Image (spheres, rainbow, N blue to C red):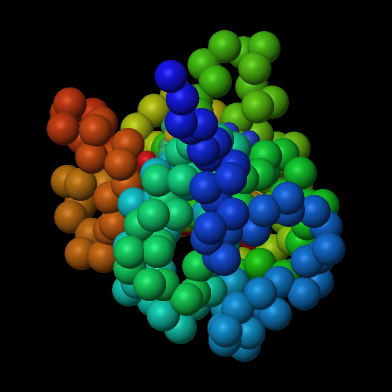
Amino acid sequence: MRLRKKKGVADKLLNFDFVLNGLDDSRRGHWAQSFANPDQPLNIELGIGKGDFISTIAERNPDINFVGFEAEATVLYAAARKVRDLQLNNVRLAVFNVADIDQIFDPNEVDRIYINFCDPWPRNKHAKRRLTNINFLDKYRRIIKPDGQLHFKTDNRPLFDYSLEQFAALNLTVDQISFDLHADQPVDNIQTEYERKFSALGTPINRCVVHF
Ligand SMILES: C[S@@+](CC[C@H](N)C(=O)[O-])C[C@H]1O[C@@H](n2cnc3c(N)ncnc32)[C@H](O)[C@@H]1O
């Protein structure tokens, strides 16, 4: 019997010209040239999951360029299909561990960062893996423009409290703090996959905006 070889996800990702395969530091300082409209602001999302958020916000904001990073190729593949189906020319995606985010952007290259429902890493010994740990914030500070913003949402209250402490430790200004985002009914909130999942369980959603 002839078995059909199953195509790997890495191979499938090669079919999308907006997926940046084998991302290295060669775009550093030149990210604008990755887009059809290089003069637009550059926003990035860290840990995009299946891409509900980045595909929606990019569709609503064609005058902003977006790059989405995700560690898992299989998850990014789901996001890539959404970007393709919506024919978004202002989105680029990459399988990439954002622990190295400061290696691939120049200082002041990024206008805004989104972190939605990052892994909470609840054990203290793993605190350095949280995407709002001070070491990560320091990397973001290196690549973001002065007064650039980090928009952060999480269902996890201990992670949110920890994050507020980390922002304070770097003397960063934080505003638009909400401990129950949906009760505050923001008109322009874009729900992520995890946000829908947790709010359906009755978990309040925390959100804030951090100014660098
Ligand atoms: C809990 S999910 C949330 C997904 C999505 N943001 C949402 O709100 O629905 C966290 C995602 O971040 C990704 N992730 C975790 N650590 C990462 C890292 N260091 N670099 C890139 N992606 C990461 C995971 O693979 C996962 O898809």
